Image (tube, rainbow, N blue to C red; front, side, top):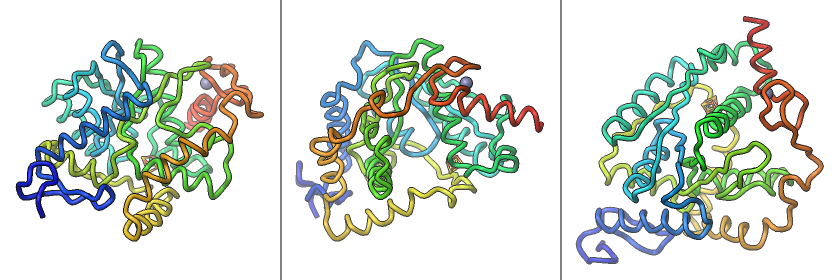
Length: 300
Ligand code: SF4
Ligand code: ZN
C-alpha cells in the first residue's frame, strides 16, 4: 500500500476517504480537515482568544496540538472531576502535554467546589454522566466568560458527533437536534463553542496523536458504562465498516439539509433566563449547577 500523495509506503489506510497516507502526508491531511472545518464554519480567527477544553484524552490533546501548530492563540482548561480511578491520570496527561507544548493550562478541581464526582454519584439519584456533563459545561462556560476568552473549543470528533446525532434522531429530540452542529454561537450568557475536529474520526485523531508524537494515554472513567452514546457509536462503526464514508455523509447531510427543519434555540418552547442564584443561563429559575451545589452542601 502506497501513500496516495507521495507514493512512498503508507502507514495509515483510510477506507472512508478511499486513500492511504505516509506519516507526513497524513499530518497534512489532518491539518487540512481541521483548517477546512474552521474556515467553512467561521469558528475563529487568529485574533481570537481560544480556550480549549483539555480532558487529557487523545482528542483534546490532538486538538490543542493542531491549533497551536496552526498558530492560534490558545490556553487550556482541565476540569479535575475527583474520580479517584481516572482523574489523577487524566490530569497528569493534560499537565505533561501542556508543559511540553508550552500551552498555559488552568485547572479547576470540582472537589474544592464540594462536587467530587465520586461523592456526587453516591448522593444524587440522576444518572452520573448527566450530572457530570452538566457540571463540566457550566464550569467551562463560566471560566470562558469570566476570563475574556472569545471562543471555547472542544475535541469532539466525527464519531462523537454522529453518535450524538443518531441518538437524538432515535429520540426525535427536537431541541437538541436544533442545537447540534460544529458551532454554537454566543448568546444569552453562553460562550461561543466550536468543534474543529468534527471532520476527523476517532481513528484519525488517534493516528494524529501517534504520528505527531503526542503522549496520550487512556484513563477510562469507571462510570462510563452508564453512558448511552457508546451504543450508538458501535452501531455506526459497524455501518461504516460496510459502507465507508457513511458517517461523514450522515453528518454533512444533516448540516446541509436536515438541521434547518428544527427551530434554533430561543425559538422553541424553552425560555432561557439568568439563574436566580448565579446569573448564568438556565431554563429553570435556579440552574442545575446551583441546585447541585446546594444539595451537596446540605448533605455534606
Ligand atoms: Fe463524567 Fe460520565 Fe464521562 Fe465519567 S463517563 S467523565 S461520569 S460524563
Ligand atoms: Zn446558577
